Length: 317
Image (cartoon, rainbow, N blue to C red; front, side, top):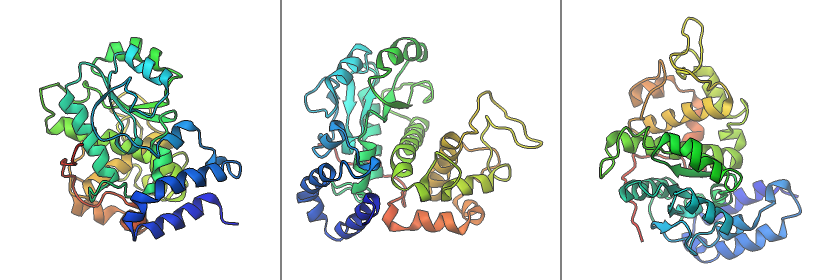
C-alpha cells in the first residue's frame, strides 16, 4: 500500500493538469481523504483546525475575533486580549498584526504570502498538499508586533499555549513604521514569510528535499557544504572567523532556514534583507557556487519554489 504522503503527491501531480478540478473537487476530496485515513498514519492525524482550512477565508484583513477566521475561539480571545487585532489568512495561513501596525503593512504581508503560494495568481494554491501544513496555526503562525518589550513581556505570555510557534515580522526589524512599507521593510517581510513556508510547509511535506530538522535533506547538505566557505551566519563561529553578533544559529532549523532564504531570494533576482558572511551578492555568482542537486530540486516544478521576482500585486478580495 502506498504511504499517504506518496499517494498525495501522485494526486497533486495529476490535478496540476486541471485547475478546475482543484477549485471544484479538491476541497471535498481532501476532507473525505483526511477523515478516511486519519487512523492509518501519524502524518494523517488532522485536527479540526486543519480540516477547517478546506474552507479558506477571503484575502482581506479581518478583526481577529471574526467568525470568518478558521481558528479556535480561545485563539481569537488571546489575540484580541494581546492587542494583536488585525488578522489575515491567505490560503489558511494565520497572519496577525498589532492593533497599531499600519494596515498597509499587514495587507502587503498578506499579498506576499499569497503570491508565494500562488505564483500565477489564479486564486488557486500552486501546491495543494501544503494546505494542511501551513494552515496549522497550532504549529506555526506569523506575527507582526510593533514594540519589543510589549511583545516579550505582555503579548507573548497571553498567546503562549494558545497558538503555535510564532515567526515574527516585527517593526523593530523593519527599522521604522512609515505609512507605507519601504524597500527594507518589504525585504524583511519576504524573508520571514520564506522562513515560515520553509520550516512549517516544505520541510514537513518534503523532508528529503527541504527538511530543516536535521542535516539530511538536500538543502541541509548544501548548507553544510557552503559552511565556512561562502556561508556563515553572523551568530555562528567558523575557523578564523568568529561570530560577529551574539546568539546561536547553529541548529539546523535556524542555520538551514536562514541560508535557504538567501539562496531562494537571490536566485530569482531579488535582494535579500541581509547577506551572510561570505555570501555572494549576485545571482550569477550564486549559481556558480551552488551544487547541482540543490539547483535541480529548486527548479523541479513539482515543488513550486519561487522562480521569478515577486510582483507584490496579488489581488485582494
